[in-house]
Structures are given as structure tokens and as C-alpha cells.
Length: 211
Ligand code: SAM
Image 1 (cartoon, rainbow, N blue to C red):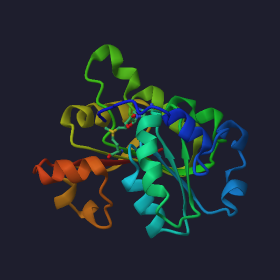
Image 2 (image 1 turned 60 degrees about the vertical axis):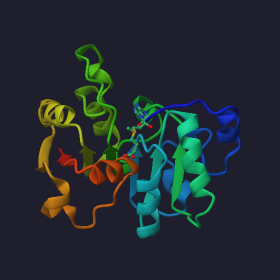
Image 3 (image 1 turned 90 degrees about the vertical axis):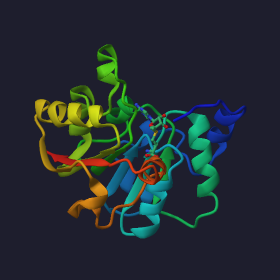
């Protein structure tokens, strides 16, 4: 995500009624925050949030949380959020590595990773959202049958993930190197990045992992 700092972004996030300001206080109590016990799904690195807001509109019987660490990026999502009537979505401005402090074991049913930053240098491998370090974080908050769904156009990151995820003790349940021409295409909701890459004719890779 190209990042240009927007002056006042932190302040606007801090005042937003759509952002949970003290997410640590919600650990183990997210059902109360949503007012129901519907499954909770998270997108890590939601960017401007097209994907997660579209899911929330399509599935009122599920709850959604969008996580984005940069306030200037999240702010763009909030501008879109203000135009929608939704009661099943919250946003968090945090780094995903803090997720175990925010969600209790088993509190989350699905995690989406969409077009995550590739971090191509070996010395930055731990920052990749499909690294064994991050898979350990997801393991601690996902329910027993919970899944991680990962989409990317980056073949290097995808090939790495096909190895790093099993190394972390997970199994790859489904995968494709060309999502839009595969059986996984049914019901696919496109992200902002996916729309752009698909228009350029780039194939999109997807995997679904569980334990
Ligand atoms: N998911 C969106 C899409 O597909 O259009 C945005 C993709 S963008 C390339 C990746 C986003 O993930 C960026 O906005 C970045 O700030 C966010 N991100 C990367 N690592 C993160 C982390 N550890 N915690 C929270 N957000 C993260």
C-alpha cells in the first residue's frame, strides 16, 4: 500500500465511532461488543477495507473485524464506512502481532490475509503474515475448525507460504494458482488490490489452511 501520511489521521481515528479504541479491554468479550454470538471473521491488513465491508454487507449473520496498522490507510476505509448502514463490523488500528492480547483462544472463526506485503528480503521473513511466527498468533485465537484464507498475486510469497504454513503445523486444505479460473472462484469477493491486478491480467493465487 502506497503510504502518504494524512495530517490529523491519528486524531480522526481516535474519535471515530467505528474504531474500537481499547481493543485489549474486549478480549473474551467480543460477542458482547457485537451484541450476538455470531462467528467472528477478521481481515488482517484490510487497507481501505473494500473486501471486509462487502462481506459484512453480504453476511449480516456474521461479525467482521478489519485490522490495519496505518491510520492514514484506515482513514480511507472509515470514509467509506460512514456511507454504510452496518452493525456487524468494527475496525482496529493495531499491528497484527498484538492479536493474542485482543482475542481470547477460540474467539475467532476465520482470518483473511489479502495481498499481504511480500517482505522479499530473507532477513524480513518474520514480518510476512504467513510466516510460522504469525501462524502461531493465529493458532492462539482461532477456534478448532477455524481457517486462514490467503490471496496474493505474488508467486514468490505464495510459494513461500505453501512451505511455511505446513512447517508451522497447519495443513493446506485447498489451493490454486489461478483463483479466478478455479472452483474456488464461486462467491469470491474481490479486494482493492485484486481488482487492480485482475484488470492487468495477473493470475491470483489462493490457499485455505486449517489445523
Ligand atoms: N487487503 C487489502 C487489499 O487486498 O486490497 C490491502 C492490501 S495492502 C498491500 C496490505 C495492507 O496490510 C497494508 O495496508 C498494510 O499497512 C497492512 N499490514 C501489513 N502488515 C500488517 C500488520 N502486521 N498488521 C496490520 N496491518 C498490516
